[in-house]
Length: 161
Image 1 (tube, rainbow, N blue to C red):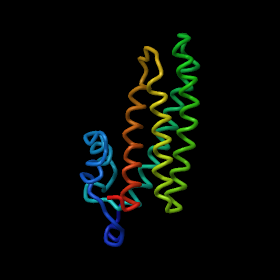
Image 2: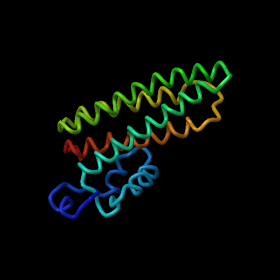
Image 3: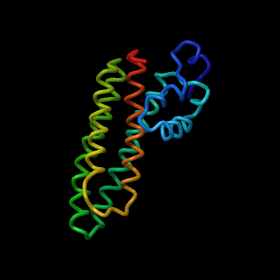
């Protein structure tokens, strides 16, 4: 994913620099160290593209879980929570698509703004009441960490850091 020619001609960033700006540096390090080649220094454009795509795929997997939970649960309160989360995740997917488009267009302010909107929607799903024993709370927390990386990367791309 990160070829040496890209590293020579593009702006690279260290994982430690990105994660120092993240609200949860430990989780950020774990996520970014799983990106092929990123531990050696990552091209900001390639890393951003990879992370936005990963967030979108993960959000799609999470909304699939939410739909399955909604169909299989009998607890009325949890069913309502999952239905609300389904709407939240529709918005997450839209915001991540818009973040991707902003990135492609070089609109890093828009990339950050759309990331922030997606983050709020994930958090909206996460705080809803209910004794949820499913994997949804863990998936929400993980996606929050990934989206926070998108927000930090947008600032790096915009020259804030």
